Amino acid sequence: MNQRIRLTKRLLYESLLELLGDRTVEEISVKELCEHAGINRSTFYAHFGCVRDVITEIGREITEKVRDICRREGSNPKIALEQICEYLYRMKSTEMVLFRNHTDKELSSAFESLSAEFYHIGNFDIKPQDEKLTLAFINYGMFNLIKTWLTENIEKTPKEISALLLDNILKVNSGKCH
Image 1 (tube, rainbow, N blue to C red):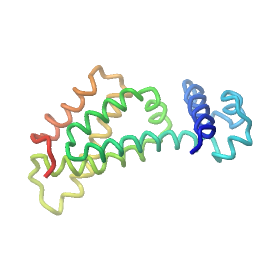
Image 2: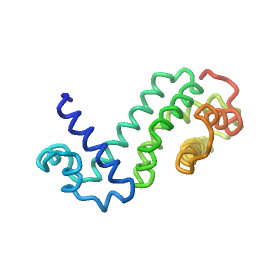
Image 3: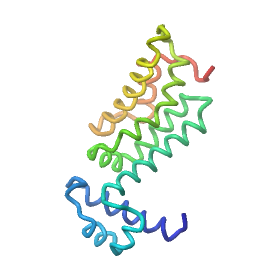
Image 4: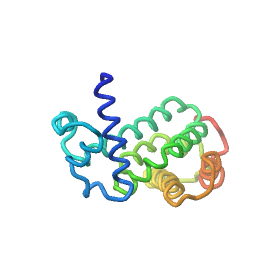
């Protein structure tokens, strides 16, 4: 993607996030978003079909960053989770908008590979036929704990959240995957 397209998208992202401070995505028109971003509507439509597409792409970018952390730190899921918590904490204002506008499904799916790693290094006494259910519980539980931490402004550091998940809830004793 060239620099001009990146700048256009960044202007749209930032403008949308500002406009979403006190409204929902459904209450914002393409015309209003373009005026706020300082771009024309034809430029908008060259990249997006509607305002919701912009917020969906913001979510995809965050999701890709979480997946990158998982891939990069895959041999040490404890470090991966801590880095994810730190990243999401830094992106807290953006995350709040995404959560409020129900675009978190894709982000929760980014946790799936990490959840599988935690399952394999955790102290679980699970029957093979219950593995899929346990993985779903770990994935959505971990994601929703992080979501609650961010949306309810719970005063814990990213490191404390990571430790709470790993040491107390998932009972992961090893830092390395099998």
